[in-house]
Length: 539
Image 1: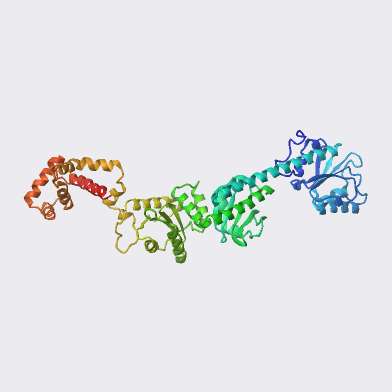
Image 2 (image 1 turned 90 degrees about the horizontal axis):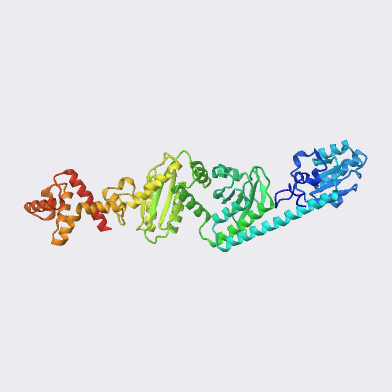
């Protein structure tokens, strides 16, 4: 049997007419396709040998009908009726042996099969029909058993995902891996929330998503539909629809029963995940899209644009601005995230909002070129500070291309890194931005860098050691002098010292540090070191 089935259909799929004709047991009969050449992809459910004039009464559909031609009517009308009955019952194909009664197919039979689209195959040599049925039935039963095993594995895999509390991304990813097809989860307004491509790119899967999705009518069950032939399944619970799954076709091949099983189990697992995890799918989709933009994890700029566009974010002809919110230690971003979603929605500002890491919230604004970004950032900042007064809001710079948003996020991150807790906000502003980073804030951002610490110690260490050993306060005097830009009179007044005492202390500082305080370059070096020391001590 295995020898005969060596060229059979792939495991788990019903053999087609073409698959059966390629089997050695039938190939020995020199089969020739007379009609229905384009319909040889019909699945064969069973093989039926008949010498009756009305075989259709014994068929259920999907059979490969084998005959010697002996029962065929002699008249054209009878032949047409014979073919009509086979067609109406759904026979897969008619195979006639040209050995006993006929040596060429009757013209009436050819015309009738061609008119009804029924594949007609002739055999030029004698074939053992019983052996054909044994081989094909063994193949069919074997494939059915394999399909059952595959279905069982699918059920077990999704049961395991559900039991371990897998999130929607894990579930959709498993569906794509099991099916070998691209799988997309969308919400009720046709925004693609999760896309797991298989054999294609995100750009190919999601470009023009909303338009393409709306062309495929939603149904109440798993079905193939729409101009692209998507396999879709609703995701719902107790009559409430939450979204829809779409499995995209690949290379024009038809969906198999296993694909339907995968999609239906995916929908069930997503329903459970939605009930377990309180975070809405849209929120998760925004978070993942933002993280991928920040970390530049997209395969290409085109993939990034397609994914963000499928979430409803305009990706062409506008400007983008990144805003980061540091909520402080233990800060919970759930409520600010929700409020910012509402604020931006009510203001009609397209944006992605999501928690990027514990205590840090990210926002990507997509604005028209003629719409100023500062009023939007101001509104967001005041909303956040109203919820979390200790929060720090940092904005990056405008960029014209979505591919450059990672730079805007880096700039916003540097702003936060350079902003100490409690740093006063500029007048009439609820956020910090890159121009706010002065020397002190730059050194604050670099305070953990050992090179800055080493520089400070080498420049001021001996002076600090002298003050510690002798109880003097030369470091404070140096600070007054540097803050006064080298004006000794001003420095003496600030320190409450006489001019002569100030001169003596400055000479002592020059001797201890082996430097010339009259040199502008040396004063700059010491001023940087002293500013870094103040930052380090304050921290």
